[in-house]
Length: 100
Image 1 (cartoon, rainbow, N blue to C red):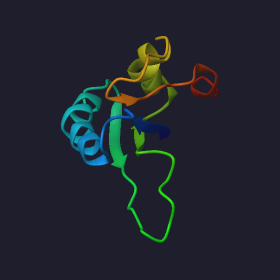
Image 2: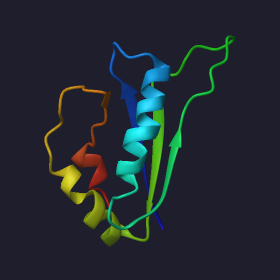
Image 3: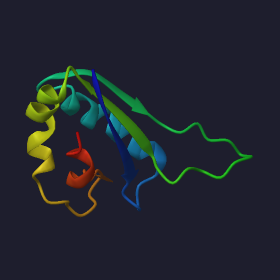
Image 4: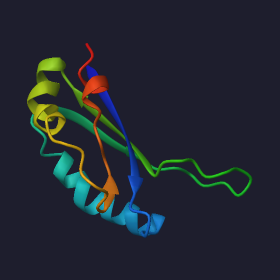
């Protein structure tokens, strides 16, 4: 099993609630269509008034059977150039994503 972790930030002018709602309703269903994906998990911070908020808005876990499954599902994303922030920032660093 291969686990791929992505840290996600929301667009600066979006509230956390708006981001979370959009991420769950729109991006979750899109991720579930990735070829070879075996498991998908969205993680959101639990805010605590005694602690500083983390520097991220979600951490996503994607699981594949092996690197072949990862390559068929995520390979096309790794070849794209990073895009400016839209609803959220999700940039995959090829130098890190490609290490085996």
